[in-house]
Image (cartoon, rainbow, N blue to C red; front, top):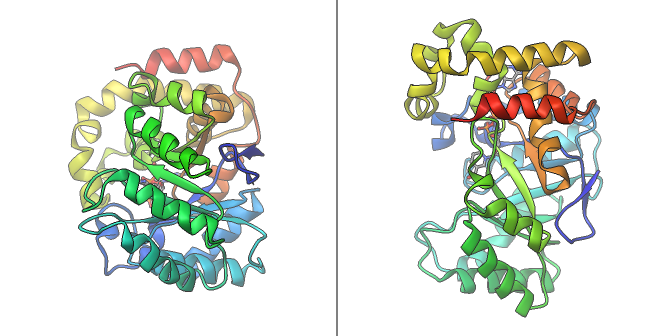
Length: 320
Ligand SMILES: NC(=O)c1ccc[n+]([C@@H]2O[C@H](COP(=O)([O-])OP(=O)(O)OC[C@H]3O[C@@H](n4cnc5c(N)ncnc54)[C@H](OP(=O)(O)O)[C@@H]3O)[C@@H](O)[C@H]2O)c1
């Protein structure tokens, strides 16, 4: 278990990303394979069974649909509010900071009795209010006891400093910054986000740690699978999913496979373990899953620990 920032909340190094729980009627379906309630319940059951203690959802994933499906799934698995940690996000696009206060009731209603243990500003851009105004609204929610901690997402090092400073002035600690981190996306090591997070005691929550499935090796094994990937993944991943792109990352996949053999672990498990081991306790990961097998596999990534030599070999192969 690791501590979420400097809060008193403890979480497993691997959580479950719930963007898949958004139904088919929303934009999330262009990014991920949407699943129905029954499948979501099986996915949550598999994650819990593997030792996952927390779940990341968002208002934006189906306008509350993902929060609802997560809550129903947890209840169906016999989990009571307070027994797991739930993180959600407010979407700033075209809204003022006042909507943070106005929409918290919706978040709690969709979560059906589960508390908002972590409330995050989904992105630093798009709001009609300044970042300090948004952060102060979050601080007020915390002081009013409506949320347990405050986080941000996609914030730069400079924005992280600002968020920390504004919240500290309100007597509130900044718990986390949710950013993209994987073997193929190591920007945090160069753009100051990792160093700043370490210095401020902020947890980084790594999203897309499997690069939408690329780091499972499945597209390397069967390149034709890329044709059935969700449209945005195909579009944004077109270089990585091309024949040349797959040839470029094949040595990395082969090394992940070779290392995994010693632990009885899959390619994806070694890729997730790299994320949660390489950066120490600063980084936790939220792989997504559309099938129970994938969720169980992700949870199994917590069952071993890569050596420094193995991490070094993967680092060398993952550099651009
Ligand atoms: N804050 C933000 O701006 C932001 C942005 C993006 C994501 N997120 C969060 O991060 C979470 C994860 O994002 P992501 O879905 O992009 O992450 P990911 O973990 O990189 O990819 C997950 C996908 O990989 C495939 N997969 C997973 N395990 C597999 C396995 N064992 N074998 C084969 N394929 C496997 C599945 O694809 P198929 O379903 O196609 O099989 C699954 O949907 C989201 O749910 C969300 O909570 C946040």
